[in-house]
Every structure is written in C-alpha cells, then in structure tokens.
Amino acid sequence: MSPSDPAQLHHTSIAVAGGGIIGMSVAWRLAQQGWPVTVFEKETLGGEASWAGAGMLAPGGEIEGPSELATLSLQSRRLYGAFVHEIEEASGCRIDYQECGGIDVAYSLDDLARLEDRAARQAEIGIPSKPLTAAEIRAFWPRIRSEGLAGGRFYPEDGIVNPRELVAGLRCACTRLGVRLMEHSAVTAGRIKSGAVEVETSSGSNTYRALVIAAGAWSGSIIVDGPSPLPASEPVKGHLIGYHQPEQTCSTIIRHGSVYLLQRANGLLIAGASVERVGFHREINPHIVSDLARSAGFVLPHLEETVPSEKWIGFRPASNALHIGSWHSTHLYLAYGHYRNGILLAPVTARNLADTINASLQTR
Ligand code: FAD
Ligand code: GLY
Image (cartoon, rainbow, N blue to C red; front, side, top):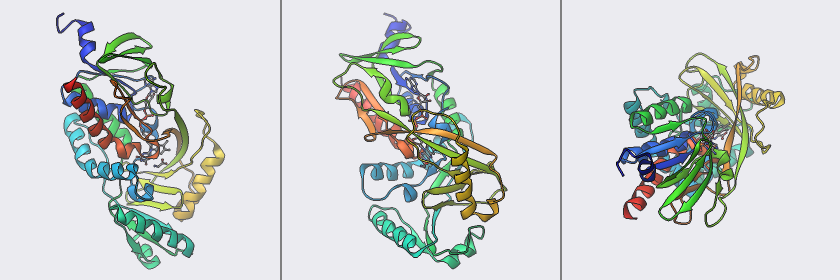
C-alpha cells in the first residue's frame, strides 16, 4: 500500500471525538509529536463548554484541599503562561491571558473564618494566599461594597484567559500542523480491535490507530464495545451574565461565596455562575439571570442599576472522576470529566495524554 492510500493513512492516524478545548489541545500536542490526527466535532469547533466557560485559572477559588484534581490543577496553572505563548506563536492569534490574581471577600466573621480555614488547607498543597483587612480592600478595590465588609484573602497566582480566543488559536495552530478538523461530524461508536479502533462517524467508518474521547458532557453517550461501558458523563448547566464596562473596572477575579466576577481585556465583565442538574436544556432562565445580576450588584454596587448586556449558558462536563488515560489498556483513550476546570486543566491534560499515547503506541 502506498502512504497516500486512504486506508493506510487512517490506520496510522489518531481520531479525536470532540473539538472543544480538550480535544483540540490533545490533537495539537499529538500532531507536534508527528501523528496524523483527525478531530471529529459534531457541531462547530469550540462551540460548547469551551465557548461558555468564564476562563478562570483559579486553584485559589476552586480547590478546597489535597486531591488528584488539586495536583493536576496546580501543574496546569504552572504550564499556562508558556501554553498560551506557544499557541500565540504557532497560530499568530492574540490571546487575552492575565496573571491578575483573585480576591475572596467576606461580609461576616463566620465567612471570614471559613476563608481562613480553607486557606490553611490550601497552603499545605502549595496554594499561596494572604489575608486582607477591610481597610486594605477599601483602599485597593474601591468599587467593592464596603458596608459590612469583614475582610478577605488575596490569591496572587489565580489568573484568567479568554477561552474563546484560546480555542480560535488552537484551531489555527492545529490547521497549520495538518490536523484534519471535521465539523458537523459526530463519532457514534468505537470498536476496539487488536492494536486499533474502528471509528464510526456520521460520515462513515474507518480504522484508526487510536481514538481519544474528548466529547465533554456528551462523552459517555458514545457507544464502545470494549471491556465495559464508558464512565457516564453528565451536563451541569451554568448561566453566566456579562456587562460591557470600562477597562480596569474589575482588575482581579473577585469572589463572594459561590459568585465570581472577572473582566476580559475586551471590557466584558462576567459574573457567574449557576450550577444546575437539568440535562441538556439550553433555555436561559430569567430568574437565574436576575439572581446573578443581584449578586453581582451586591459585590460591585455600581452594577446595581445596570442591566447585563449578555447572558449565556453552557454544560460543564461532569463524571464520576476526571478521566485522562487509556481505557483498560486498549487503544481507546479518555479525556473527559473536567467539570468546572476544563479551561484550567487543558495544558496538563494535553501534555499527559499525548505523552501516554505516544509512549504506548511507539512500543506496541
Ligand atoms: P466541550 O467544550 O463541551 O467540547 C466537547 C465537544 O465535543 C463539543 O464541541 C461537542 O459538540 C463535541 N461532541 C459531543 N459529542 C460528540 C460526538 N459524539 N462526536 C464528536 N464531537 C462531539 N473551566 C475553567 O477552567 N475555568 C472556568 O472559569 C470555567 N467556567 C465555567 C463556567 C461555566 C458556566 C461552564 C459551563 C463551564 C466552565 N468551565 C470553566 C468548565 C470548562 O468550560 C469545561 O470543563 C471545558 O470547556 C471542557 O472542555 P471539553 O473540550 O471537554 O468540552
Ligand atoms: N469554574 C467556574 C464554573 O464552573 O462556574
């Protein structure tokens, strides 16, 4: 068979199901290692959770104590600056990435005590933070509500990225490396063979050296005839709202309880987010939007009279665990279950999974 024979080509190449931030980051790293890669995306690339996500890179706000998630989150946070820079170089696209830090504010002594407890657990795993008095917050964050302020904590290593720009950069970087990007093409099934996987898609089937399942909240619905059914995945819906505001209105992440605020370089000040287990329902609920706007206006009183100009939803990909690796030592690989932190976890997921696949396929 000649190298240009399509059957031969597919047999040496790797298929990725899902073109969100996870699927495209893994595809890009595999292509850098010399693998021919095809990404199948059932709708449009980067159009789901990776479009909706706020873009916090914030172990300070998301990690409560030691766990595998904590370890990977911290590793990924350390990789982020170089990851963004590499994608910018490879794509020619500018990506809004800010090492801005994050602050948690408390309006009661009980809430402040809870922040300090959490900070003590976080310090043990390498998440630094420092206490802030109400007077310091008033001086450095003058827009934050000052009545009743008890104090807060500053997390210097939290940051933000614009995930829509990151995905656009990844798309371009993948294209330049020859990754085949197939939109409107869903993977429906994977049949595990000896040393390969037969991949069935909405546009036909082919045998690939390996299949990576990175289909976010939809991952568990891909049919696999392997050793056991895939771990289930579940959508956890989140509403976000946005206000166009002058630059530097919100120069760090601001958190109060379950609400967070951050501002992208394009001026969009985002407040989020709801956490809803309601299946794949895309409706925007006006009551949830009003609640979020009320919470945003509580923390930043100048927003109290402002109607958010943007509102949207997305589906966080939840599962029983974060799955990154081979499925029962076969050529089927999982990359899903990133839930609230898939933007943060993209660099470490891509690096670890591409290295695992590369090492395992080279030796078989
Ligand atoms: P997705 O981006 O959903 O991509 C999966 C892709 O697979 C989709 O494009 C889908 O169309 C495609 N697909 C589905 N089925 C198939 C199939 N059968 N065949 C082919 N393609 C298929 N994370 C952070 O780190 N920081 C945050 O601040 C943050 N905020 C968030 C706020 C909200 C409201 C939400 C909803 C999420 C937030 N997240 C955040 C989480 C983050 O967005 C996700 O964890 C991450 O985007 C998951 O990326 P993914 O590529 O796995 O999934
Ligand atoms: N990580 C923020 C969210 O999922 O809403």
